Image 1: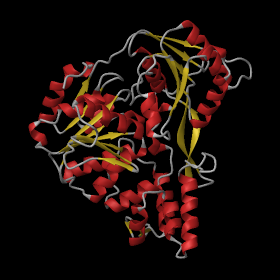
Image 2: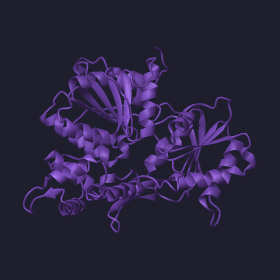
Image 3: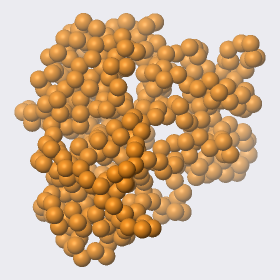
Image 4: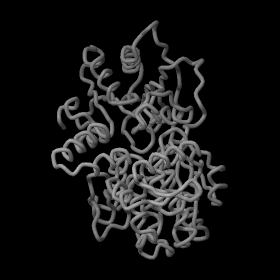
Length: 457
């Protein structure tokens, strides 16, 4: 089936040749190059793959579903045939599936359950620059498998804004770079008024952009709460009459996500209020203007609760550049930044492994039986020590200060639940059915969303 041309197409032969000669590869490609959807199918007929599967790791469920559906449509199929996906609570794969797109945490379970990764020929880590803890652990496990059990396993690390040279040195891997598909983007700062709330500043920026520029608008906000406030602020604007205002975040139903990812059927202009899910992995058609709050919600360890919590923080410069680039995918674009021009951002996003609680990671390492895995950024020793102490107290690990901890039978039961060790211990503690029900309700409230606040969906 014919499909659109992508900038990365010219690089595909070199990617195939590189993987034929070397089992690892670092691939740098900006948004719009086509790395997510064009590289996996291009490797299907590689002799070294020998008919085995390609696993593509995506950081978000929205991106995993969208990538699999796009690749399937290119082949005239539906997701679940030769190309499928697996995310939490949703599985569209079959015996015929050769490319499987999964979210990052699923790979950890795959490797822990089957360290030989039987039937898998290649692992592709997409958008690795986001540096989620699950991706770092998945890569460390994959490298250990490759070194000790599967020398034929191919590992490709792909990203738009990572330090490719440093990563290539760490992996001892070739490094290839692709051009992107982009047009000039005019970047400016849209100043806030004295003591002005974010949603009111955003409303003025949206009204200005709609009056001055063509095309759709993509607005980056840190989370659902800010999206709801912005939506309410825009609801009373005369400038938005006839404009479709949409939301995009990971908790939306599939039908609403699909609607945002497609052009408006009636040709109306759109304003899309999105979290950083729209930063890299999904493409929104028709966007000519980006309005960037400069904020994101990222996990930070809270010592008072013992959990990581999502805090609103300033984004890195690499993320700001990537967000602005979304305005230049189809033609010349405009990006408005809602922070002062004098504000300086950190160059790169800090990896999660450096700033979250590590009990879950420690439990995974104990289950693997080797705490000496190679990480791109080593886990902080203090955080690992605290995690070990917690797991010993919970009964998930056993061992002394002088010996490496080993996982207990109770620890294995905790790991199988796929939740934070504190919550897993709580879920396994009660024997009374009523107490078990209460524990499940509490775990759902802590880990997911409050059903009373979200309307029970």
